[in-house]
Structure formats: structure tokens, C-alpha cells
Amino acid sequence: MIQIDIATNKQSKISVYPLLDGAVLTTSGEAIKSNNTVTNFLAAGEHQGKFGMVRSVYLNDERALFIGAGEADKLTLHKLRALAAKVAQKLNKNSVEHADIYLSELKVSDVSLADKVQAIAEGLWLGLYTFDTYQTKEKKGKTELQSINIMVDGNVSEAEQALAAAKAIASGTIFARDLGNEPGNVCTPEYLGDQAAALSHPKLKTTIMDKAAIEKAGFTALLAVNQGSNKEPRFIVMEYNGADNDDAPIALVGKGLTFDAGGISIKPAGQMDEMKFDMCGAAAVLGVFKAITEMNLPINLLGVIPSTENLLGGSAYKPGDIITTYKGLTVEVLNTDAEGRIILSDALAYAVEQKPAEIIDFATLTGACVIALGGQATGLISTSDNIKQGLIQSGKHTHDRVWELPMFDEYQEQIDSKIADIKNTGGREAGTITAACFLSRFVDDMPWAHLDIAGTAWNMKGTDISPVGGATGAGVRLMVDYLRHKV
Image 1 (cartoon, rainbow, N blue to C red):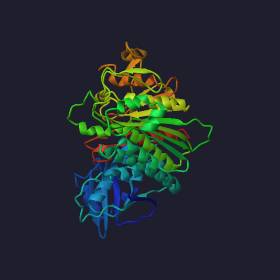
Image 2 (tube, rainbow, N blue to C red; image 1 turned 135 degrees about the horizontal axis):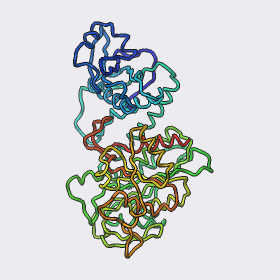
Image 3 (cartoon, one colour; image 1 turned 90 degrees about the vertical axis):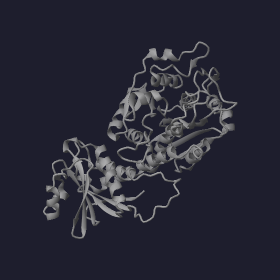
Image 4 (cartoon, rainbow, N blue to C red; image 1 turned 60 degrees about the vertical axis):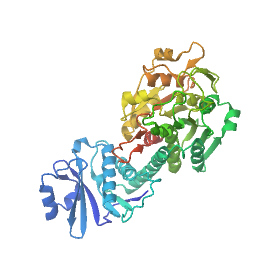
């Protein structure tokens, strides 16, 4: 990650100034407006502040970059984040080593300096994200961006605190993205366990259960899904105690399918390679833990991740099988590709036993959620109004958005089985909701929310804060903001 600092005085020979619609400059831009080169630039019709436009102007031995910020009354925190990402990408592409940026001068309604600085810093760091681990071609003759100063005219201490938070959140998001982007032959359940164990903090305890420990613990649903793979499963438990020991933790549960071929109910070949992303729920949980440990957040947090592959083999579980879960409920398997909810059943039941204050799970659970919401919002189903409203507000603030779906009692009927307690699919209708109904059978009366990130966890075309396609780190910014409001 590049070095980002807060500054009040000009540090570099390259400065980035925002330009609003109608060629309107902010304070720092106005200070150089009298320069003839700038005057001529502003007079040019094509340079009127269109959002995302980037143009260079040379001023003697200095260089000014103007970035279009669009209409002033339409600015949001996420637009600041996206502008910062564009700035970082442009500077890096042009082999700029150091620059000062004045994006914090842009006014966003009801937003503090700290919020602006955090969004800008997140955009700078996330905008430069790459995943080129397996590209062997050397990149010669390219000077990469080394440092950026976010220029502020205000409370430096407040800005520096926001910068520290942004760094932790970006670090957690990048960690989640890296995990998601790793190929399935690298990111196995064992690898995921190793990555969890590598997160180190004095207040963090991590337990990694191998197959023998999983069998001893009785996580039979996880073992059923694992039957078709020659890779051992893992059951990961993380306990972060940043608050009083008497405070019940918030439990985060993440689906860790490191590759999902669908099992006997095999998926179509097209785009099956993207099923390496089926562990992005686990990646989100690990990314949150990385962020909150770096922030040293005063909160208690429990993380639970069941991890396996779902493959075909002579021992694979089959449609028509009946399996017994950790909780004791029996499940009629109608479709082996509805495996995420099966492994989550053991993890949720285990989380309930730890007596947390609430449970939130993250899972790339249903294609139905992609059809319903696309890639713009995560599906939210919750039994708690408090959790629901908190997640909705954090989603709006971070642009890691959620959208609520109902879970009426009538939907529960779709997963009732005639030969077992429940079946693992309720059919095509309301697929996202009936998947949540299945999960709800394992949380008892615990306050709980389910986040279906199937549409938001990866984007092969890239996003507005990173043109690099692949894992997005969905859920990390959302959950860190949610947890920060809990302390």
C-alpha cells in the first residue's frame, strides 16, 4: 500500500485540484486561477468539470491535474471515493511518484472532514489494487506511485484518525479481495485456515479444526458436503476480545466454499471457474477481523467459518440423501448444489451455543439474489429490526449497500420435508428467501441477519473504485462501519 499522509502545506510539484461542473474551482484551485495557462484551460469548452475527467496543466516547474467532480449538489462520499480512485490510477499510469490532492475541499452535505478524508483515502488505496501474482511478465520502465498527501484546511488530528481508520479498512478489504482472487488449487480449506491463523493480535485467539477435530466436534453437515473432495475441510473459530469479558460478542459467520462444482448436481461448465469466489463470505469475515484488529476496536467479536470444497466423487453426497446436522435437525438433500446453507447450518448452530449478542452471516448463497438485485446491493434478511436498520444505515454510509427482502412465515412451508425435518431447497420461487428460511432454523431466537453477497462479492468487469475485475471485498466496509457504531 502506498504512503498517504495528511498535510496542510504544499509538499509536491504535482497537485490535483477538483473542478466542479461549470468550471468551478475550490479554494486551492482559485489560488492558481490567475495563471494564464489555467485561464486558457478553463476557457476551453470541453473542460467544464464532467465527473471523472482528468486533465494536466503545466505551470512553470509545477504541474496541476484537474479532476472533474460533476455537479456540486450531487456529490456523495462514494463519489469522493471514486474520484480518489481515478486520481490514483491516473497518477500511477503517468509514473508520478509524489502528489498533493485537494479533494477534501469538496463539500458534501452533512458530511464531516473525517468522513471525507476516510472516503478519499479508501479510494486511493483501493483504486490501486491489482492481483498479478501469477503474471510472470516483468513490468519494465514503470515508476509506480509512492506517496500522496491529502491536503486539509482544518482539524489535522481528526483527519489523521480518519486516515488510520481508512488504512485498516482498505487493508481488510484488500485481504478479502486477495483471498477471493486466489485460484482454487491454492486457496483450499487448509490455506484458508492458515490465513486465518496468520492474523495476529494480542486480543485474538484462533482455533483451526482439521477433519479429525471436525468429526470429534460433530459437524456432520460440513462433513457431508466434504465427502466428494480429497481436500480436508476446516472449521475456523476466531475470538477477538477487545472489550470487557462480560460483554457478549457479535458473531460473524462466513461461508467458506473454496470451490463449488455443484457436486452430483453439477453446475454448467460456462463460468464454473468463478466458483473459486464461493468462499467470499469467509473472506469478508477474515477481512473484517483484519480491519478491526488493526483498529484495535473495543468490541468482542466471534468469527465462525466452515470451509470445504463441493466436488464430485464416488463418496460424494447425493440428491435424495438425508443428513443429520450438528444441531440434530435432519435435512433431505434435493440438490447438492445448495450446499452453502448446509455447511452454514453447523456454523450457525455452533455460534448460537457461544451465546453471542447477535449473529450476522455472509454467504454467496443464491443465484436468485443475483437475478433480483444484480451487483448493486447485497440481499438482507433479518429477524432483528435493530440489526436490520444498523446494516441499512451503514450500507448507505459506505456504499456497501444492502436491500431488505421479506421472510414471511408462509415461505417456511417451502422447505418442509415429508421424510426429514427440512429439505435443502424450496424450489425456484423466492430462492433467496427460502435459503434464508433454511438458515433461520439453526439460529433459534437469536437476533440474526443473513447477507447474501452472491451478486456483490465479485465483478469480472471491475467497479468504479477498482477497474481490476474479480473479488470486491463486499461486506468489509459495511461491517466495520456497523461495528464502529456499536462501540
